[in-house]
Amino acid sequence: MHEDMIRKDEDVIRKDIEEFEEGFPDGVYAIPRDPKAPKVKVRALHDYCKEKGIRPEDLTSEEMEKFLEQK
Image (cartoon, rainbow, N blue to C red):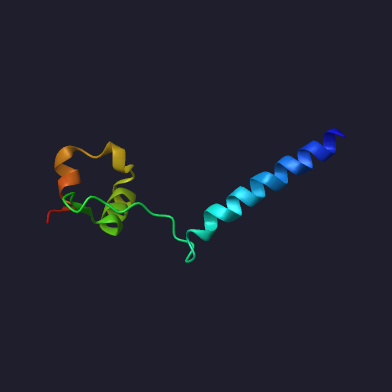
């Protein structure tokens, strides 16, 4: 009896997930970025951090500015 309840719960969860995913036919889940926010040059940021052996959160404000592209 307990296994039947678990199976029904799993079926309900699976159905909810499938209904949710129908809203994204191309499979992309993204939140539009703020058009006023600067773009981050992600590849250059990654390369710089890798070269320096640091993580992005360890950058100084001045270093981070190098990777922001203002509109």
